[in-house]
Amino acid sequence: MTVGTTVPAAARRRGGTGLACLVAAGLLWGTGGLTGSLLGRGTGLPALSVAAYRLATGGALIIVFLALAGRRWPAGRAAWTRITAIAALAAVFQGCYFTAVSLTSVSLATLVTIGSAPVLVLAAERVRGQRRTGRLTGCATALALTGLGLLAGLPSGGFPETRVLASAGLAVLAAAGFAALTLISARPVAGLDDLTATGFGFALGGLVLLPVAAACGRVGFTPGPVTLGLLAALGTGPTAVAYTLYFRGLRTARAGIAALLSLLEPLTGTILAALILGDRLGPGGIAGAVILAAALVLAVVAGRASGAVPVGGEVAAEELLGAPPGCWNAQVLGSHDRE
Image (cartoon, rainbow, N blue to C red):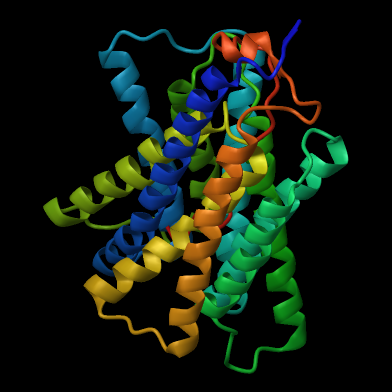
C-alpha cells in the first residue's frame, strides 16, 4: 500500500528529525579527534590502540546503561547477525584506516577514506536503483570532495610509491567498511533498537580490534583521573551518542546524504584543533573549510528536498506510520577516526 504525495508532511517532519540526528552525530564525531589526540598524548598509546579502546568503552557504557535501565538485551538470530556485522565493519574500518595512516600520513589516509565513503554510498544507491542522485546531491558531493582535498592537503615526505598505493588501498577499504555500515544500518531489525545495536556491536568490535592493536604496538597504560576521564569522554560523546544518533538518523534520511554529513567530522575537528591546540590553517585550508561548509549546507538542503519520498514520488504507508521492522530506507568510519 502506498500513500500519494498528499501526505508528505509527516514524512518531512520525520526526515527533518533524521537530518538533525545526522548533523549532531557529525559535530560529535569532530570532538573525537581532539579527545583521542589528548588521550594518546597522555597515555603514549598508538592511534590503533586508542581506536580499540574507544569502541570497547563506548559499547560497554551503552551496555551498562541498558542493564541499569532494565532494557531487554538482543535476542534472536537476526539481531545477533546485525550486531556481528556492525562489530566486524567497525573493526575493519578502524584497523584499515589507522594502518593506512601508519604507512603514509594522516592527511592522505583521511582524504581518501572520508572522500571515498560518500561516493561509495551514492554509487550503491544508484546501482540498486533506490534513489536518483539529484543535482543538489551531486553538486554537494563535488563541493565536499574539493573542500576536503584543500582542507586535508596533500601528503609530503617523499613516500615510496608502493607505500602510497598500499595506504590508499587500505583507506578505500576503510571507506567501504563505513559505507557498508551506513547501508546495512538503514534497515531495521525486529527486536533491535539503535542504542542496543550500537552498544553490543561496538563492544564486540573493540574486543576484536584490541588483539590487533596489541600485535601492532601496545595497549597497556597507567590509569589516572585525567586519562580515565578522557577515555570516558571519548567513549561517550563521539562514540556511543554520535553513532546512536547516526543510526537513528538513517531511518528517515537518505544514505548518500548521511554519508555526506559525516564530513562534518573533519570540519569540526579542524576548527577545534585550531581553537584549542593552536593548529593554524593556510589559505588553502581556510578555503577548503569554507567550501566544505557550503557543501554540507547544500547536503542538508538536498536532504530536505528529497525527504523520505522514493523515486516514484510515493512513500510507503509504514514509513509514515512508524517505520516498523522490515521497511527499507537505504542508508566506522568515513574517517571516523582521526577520532
